Image (cartoon, rainbow, N blue to C red; front, side, top):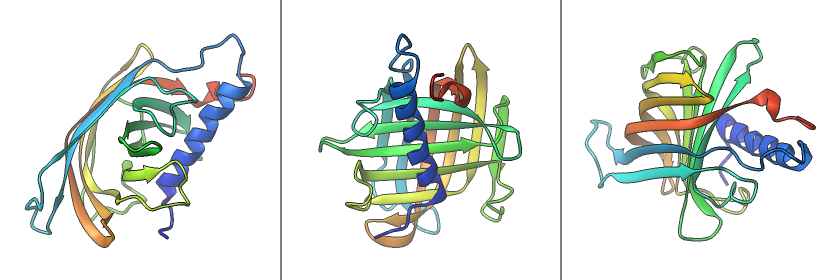
Length: 210
């Protein structure tokens, strides 16, 4: 059984926050966020960057609800305060598979909500990289029951925020990721043509009675 990465645990906490808001928030308030979207292509590559298979398209579009969190297709963002009292953005896109309760998901963590581009090189320290990402394929709503067929984290790449206004954040990204693919450790996955356009909710609103 693989250990869950810190970003996977962040995603689980994200789900708990949404559930709490839906269960304990204002009864007259909305039970779902506005619709968002995230799209990209991914392919496994060798150490020289040569594709080892055909590219696969990822497309997540729709609103997240409490009912759809573990089985739906949607994308949304969260503006939160870090332990250093600075603001950060989390963008999550999920694509449901045909098998009920099985999904693919990409979580981007961007250290600043400012418009602009942030990059990381292979040699960068994870502690100084201004973004992070986790991508899972074939994950289950019962995270202890089975392992995803792909579980990789960002190794290098760039994320660009193109706009933050009207309660939405938009941007693009490209990543080289490393992790486990079909049981093989230290595999490489390239993510290209990434884009997101998601509703941006403050973590302050995801509180009991908020």
